Length: 174
Length: 174
Image (cartoon, rainbow over all chains, first blue to last red; front, side):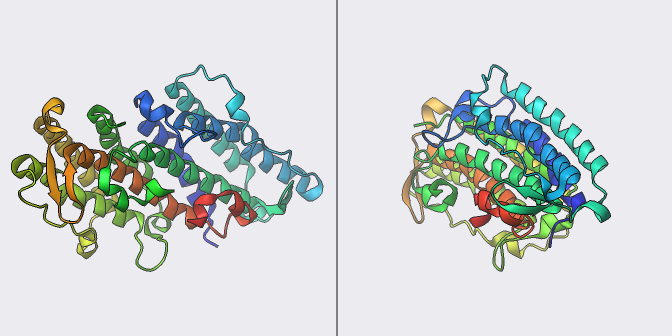
């Protein structure tokens, strides 16, 4: 096991500000490009991260601590953010993500005593029994997945533009 | 063609500070993990980015502008940074990357007049004829590739720890 709650928090703390620095002020061409129909652009990925902060990680964690395996998690709609009417600027969305993540990390620290709670189990509607430490590991890995997705989507915008160098850039083939 | 030099520079400008924010102060577990023998950890990826700033992008661009197709680029050793004896901390390496990148963006802006220079060609030792705009596109896409690599390497550290959620995290399968 590589998981360590302090190290997971290191990632959780860094993601919003990293994305804020990376995406704020970028041209619309970068923020609105995607990988084709039905795929997400950078802005939609930030909306999905906000949705997870509101309705996934902390609500599920609280349910595990309160109910154990007696009550399954309500399903999390991974596409619900796409129905939101996005009138906010990317900077406003990034600020919202940063703010709610900060609050959630405070909640995480207040809820979890590592010696007592990491092995507590809950019931995932699809996977069955899952552990608190698996949920927190997934929260951090999920951040990393979506950072990777953002830069992959952006890189593919230059798929033709890089000319023969495409051969060296495996990100363009994914 | 999606390439636009100002937008490419937006990425080139953001990468060092983004990585500086993301990686500074991270635990060694995150900075030293890799994807198995012969693969790079986050620290080695930063060394590779520094090497590119020193010996790849700007030197090749200058050669193209001076020599056109008459003289091929000297080959760039993509593994040379691994021979460097890395006594610097990650923070020092990130600072070096940021400093040399800032200088190189200044040089790029001084060298390139978009209306005049983007279609100029040079001779890649492997690919043959390449254009200035392809080199600059590749420089930006190469940043994005290595940001994706850093977060992928880190995510894989939690491959087992996420438990059944691994199924939803395609980054762990790459």
